[in-house]
Image (cartoon, rainbow, N blue to C red; front, side, top):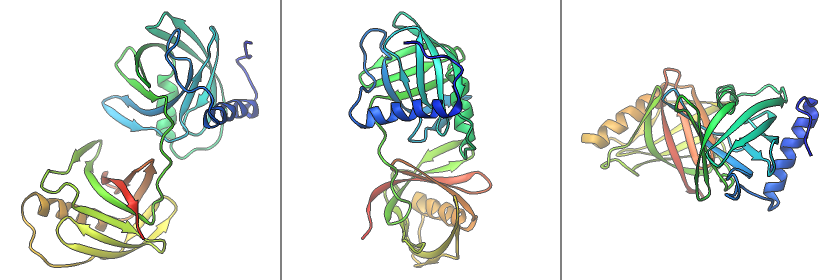
Length: 270
């Protein structure tokens, strides 16, 4: 049954919640029958203007089985509805409907997702994957599998995987890969390795920000790529406050000047 496009915000939120609940209870996930997009798809990332935006875990869209009909979903904070029509198996056209109007922290992702999920989009179907592409080459990458739950910031062993500078991220060189690790305890005591020397520090937290106190380190001489990574990490921790974000098993720490790191959850620290 067709749902009116203009809905009260509370009803839109219920629709988005129902879509999420159905999937978590074993409901239909993204599948490939018919036009290929029916079911619930979990957004993994967006690419727009040469930049990749990682999706929050609640970002998703449920496409209808019939057409034209209403899709429901979540932009990353606010729920939405949209009318979807299909051009065979190769494209869809999305006409936005109603959205909720909650104040959200991650407005960059919300704004980009809402802008991309509009108009005619080409469809690339792969097993358990669905990619929607705009005319300018921007993409919405989605999976039929729900994202892994966010790892806790504290009591998790984090392994540094890349260093960030502005909008670019560079993986650690092979010689340094897997050597820079740290754990933040429940009382925000930090300890680990900078890749060569071990270190400890005390951090303070204020919402999504961490401020690291002076690092206490061992004093081994570190050269080559390992030493360079250690120098950059030392500078980064000193550039506090750092904004932190956990998405699934990935931690991002970002300094005010745009430098930062990404780290992967290894295991819970005892």
